[in-house]
Image 1 (cartoon, rainbow, N blue to C red):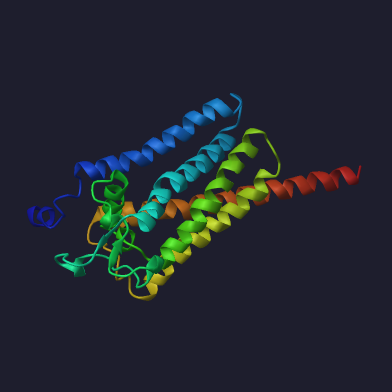
Image 2 (image 1 turned 120 degrees about the vertical axis):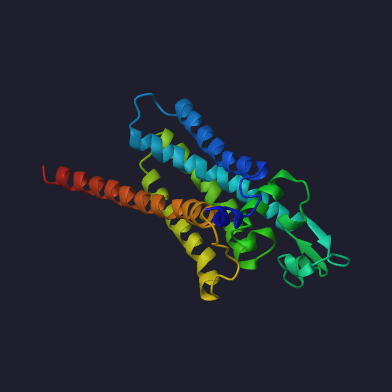
Length: 240
């Protein structure tokens, strides 16, 4: 047991890590409190869950992934004079028309969001810097998925039947984004992933990422069933 404990990173549960994990709980809490404000008190548990999920989804996209994009585009440092340059995640040549710079959270210094992403980067090194595939997906996530999730919350609050259609579209985008985030990494043998301990593998990589697999799959199932029921009602009325 002692040797197992000593093999764990000394900063596995440091203050930055704990604050980073608590920030995700704060987002869920904010979404829940918003549901108490914008949904009718007699709303079903399913409707409330859908509202909370999509608002938390939007907040994650805007706050967390939005901060990641900000760091990728605006946080940088020159590579000249850096000790142990190989320990950093390399920035693609000519990124934003520049060379000789390191972009991303690794260059964010004391910025709290940079520190948050450096915590996650312990499990997936790509999030410390600029991976062009990840950045491209996050641009779509922040500027399309995020606003769409907010619009879905609006539709749910107004009981707009179009919500089911938009939920299918967003859930499909989320599933595609997750696949394209990890498939390129799997094809090269997961070189940038660290699965050496429970926290990195099961919390950072499996739990936080598969949330955006299982819940979107359920949302698609729910929405398809809702739309199918609407067609069934319409056909029944035609036969009256």
